[in-house]
Image (tube, one colour):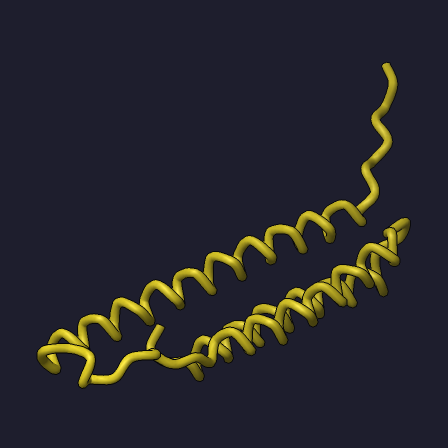
Length: 114
């Protein structure tokens, strides 16, 4: 990820797209469990706000804690890399849970008996 701003934008776009799919399904799909879809919309909103809140953080060490600027930059880069990958992993896991909730709201078709 290039910077925090782009990551926040992507989170907002993804959450907005998922919420709009839920709203569209509620309005257009017959026999849909609307309560589950509304619950999914609530989960999406919570996910968006919590993820954006976790994106903003800082490196807790200063250049004085290292023997050289090169070591400091390397440690800082690794810290942010691990932190962002952890945030993205948690975000993707929550998205999978929300998608399961959305899919469970869709009724299963009756199977034809032969």
